[in-house]
Image (cartoon, rainbow, N blue to C red; front, side, top):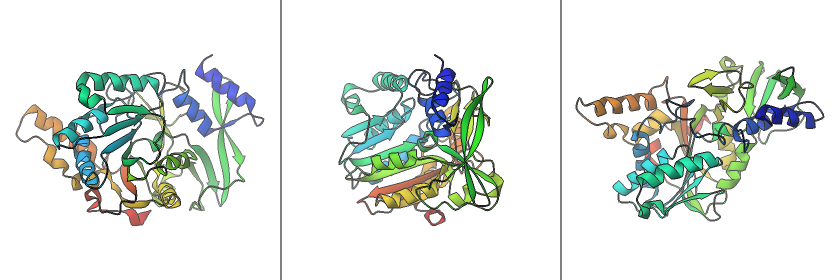
Length: 363
């Protein structure tokens, strides 16, 4: 049975001949046999469908390492990385901690995809000695009473979301049905409540709302003490629900090209959307955590001394480093499109990543 046939079968089980988009997205990305993330390990970089901040080189991880170093002044030296992709950030971070003479106790990876787990293990085994390799463990959930850093880079924008249509205060849920040989949108009246009061405009707007955010925050809640660093494409709710974004932000990536037709090529293209950081701020309050800062990636990395990692001179490495910095900080690339939020439990401190241009008040 193909993935498309599996989804059609799931639709047939529902009496209203449709399924929530969150179920469609869950199957498209994470089906154990045919899901985009679970059936392959070549999604990232030039040969894949999209880039992440760690895809271009090691400047991103080296800079983030400065923030980790500051956190480890008051925390046990453990890291959990959600969705480690190729394993490159994990590798670069472990190397950076060694350079800073920080001896990690553990580096945990939470990764749904068996294919990606295998790719991560292969890379880390090839590049690290046994003493460092034995610190790495793959786990399914955040351990009870964990103390340390949780790092979530482009995780929330891959969590299955539902799609809604609002017009003059009336909300409909946009679900996925099947007709002829393709999938279609079907709108239904929505009588339920969201877990917080969303500030919807009077004008017509399509927007995303993910119940999976809450599930991930329930994982965070189990820690004893620590910092959660969230790095993702997104913005505040006020910006997200602006009239200029009336069609919503759900989109797909295929061969490094953006497409708006997320119902096509199931299992062969990434599906993503802009994270609502106002929703994350609400959930932070609900689990009694504190927001330590919120800003864009450019300001965050520059506050941490990004430029110090650019090799000087006129060598090829110098120009490669400048290219990395441009991708990471340019407003039209990742610099403003990606936001960084830090939340904490029992760690009231100022972080240097938010020393300038902290925009927490906008949430």
